[in-house]
Image 1 (cartoon, one colour):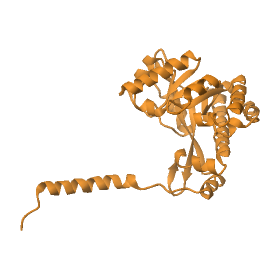
Image 2 (image 1 turned 120 degrees about the vertical axis):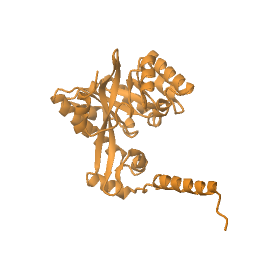
Image 3 (image 1 turned 180 degrees about the vertical axis):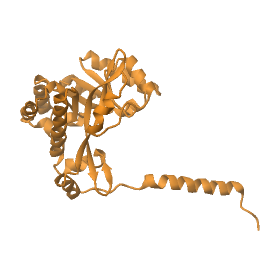
Image 4 (image 1 turned 60 degrees about the vertical axis):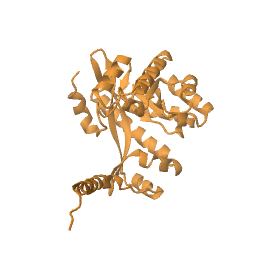
Length: 286
């Protein structure tokens, strides 16, 4: 009996190893329903993590603030991230409630840190429904005043899609927020359809370079060119610029040389629980 070629055996072993490695990655997450999400809200399964946001200084980078990020602690499936349920929340009318939960939780945390002498700025993603809610700026100011938090400590991040829902109402609400000294950032900049139009017409104080561009730094000419163009344009329009998706020391060095104001990404810090944040900041080297 002839033996199979050695190369065939090796190929078979390689295929087996690849299948074993990839099978867990191909297991699809469950498709959550409105009932699942409402149950999560009722049973207090939602929580907020905080990712440090770094500011450029003459000596490097230092933590200047945090971004509040929603998480779902599912009893069976573990930590569920917003990409898996935000669209569901929008379809079933729960997104405003989730945004309010993140805002209230984040502001409570900032107020606690203020009292302890730790001054940090907070960034929160704003639902498109609130961008057209005429009463939102006044309600938000009341929330901050009740907690002793200054409006300058809060930046609201909206996407291009949110800013396009109703341009007239959006302009009115964002203008009123800016008059009350809240920060307003255009999120995910560099990948949408009307970025330049939105930047020129709406009163943003900050623009955030999309993480897909940050991930390409400094490896590709396209990423370097896009980042420099956005940084220069933002500064010419009187805005601060933050780059997301920073994954390497080389990317961070490029951004520092390019004059970027802020940076976020896993290279700098991953999202973490509030109890761990102050210890993390204290351990940072200037």
